[in-house]
Image (cartoon, rainbow, N blue to C red; front, side, top):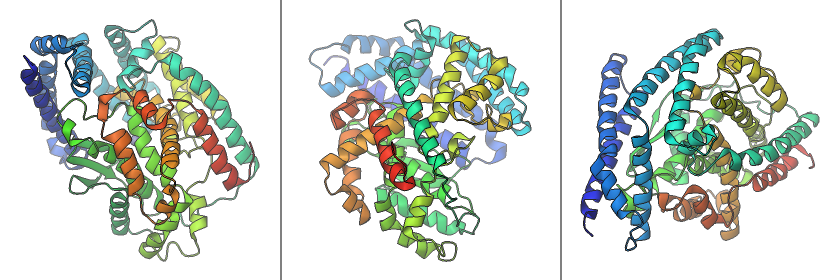
Length: 499
Ligand code: ZN
């Protein structure tokens, strides 16, 4: 086909440049010595400029237009053109000036946010945040939308999702979660973590992370584990996927669930079919679907009793003293403890999505302009009281707790909930197709589930959009029903409460 070879060459080069860029970013978070920060900033900006130039190159666009709707294309090539056209279009619609201004505004906002959070003073963050909001509104208009600016931003992270599609899901989900959380609170549960505060050797926690990564099927010949302040996953290529983790000496749970969470992300990145490596299809369909993979391993598997029947003996072997007097059932109850918290990243499965509902309400009002940024702390506290039943004692534990808005990431938060909902939909489908799934998990045999996910979700990459991929795997699209049923069944049993 005339021109396809050129399109392919340009595409693969973009993919290699992006892999190099991602590796520079990974290095910055894990290895970079402090004096290298400024130079690294310039290196990343230079490479980003090259990437942008290639992506908006008129010749590339001409080729994409030529092949768009071309009948003779295979489904893979048609999807390739669709995905790359979308990326190129977005890049072309955002003026260079806006890209530069956003980069400056977000780095100023991140710096202000750190200071504001440390001092618990929102006022230090207000003006830099207002600047980011102005630019993101401008960007939303440049990208285009059907009247709701927020949709243009949401679409960056969750292609195809709109406020009209996810709003009603949140509206049904929130009261269900509130009902379950209050039923649990009324059951007056006892504190469940007698081991927190004892000493868990850090070298052994590291060893445990590697054991868990291997167990879920993360390939350490095509990836590695490192430490960072906040755990994350980054891939340079499907054959080079970096996950990071953090550890606390007085509590093994952050290390355990960090490994399972990032490992779940890592499996997605390692799982693209080799035939699509180097193409725009070797990428997650959406942030929500990516998060479903981490949550499935972290929560559906990692907080299940069968999983701990398999892995608790290893835990006892590594930490015999710290786990004295704790048996597998007690440990399983401990990792499923439900208690309301001000901080999203510390939230349990039941209340987590209430934190997201709160952020969704606030950020769409910020983007629409309905909520002036000066009123943000009071609006936050009011929404927190209404949705979570808690008023934060200060802004550090309230409106200043997350870095996302400083980064300019508005429209990102809902993907966490979308991921949680998808994770249950997919786990239910896997259970139906793999009748021995939980017996296998109980034997520490996790490869049947890993292989199922690889086949249904990882290997196809972006061949279809997220919801179509889930529909093909599970026979249903996004809804809150399966998630709510799952929570009531699991926590009903754990806390002896009824729907
Ligand atoms: Zn994640």
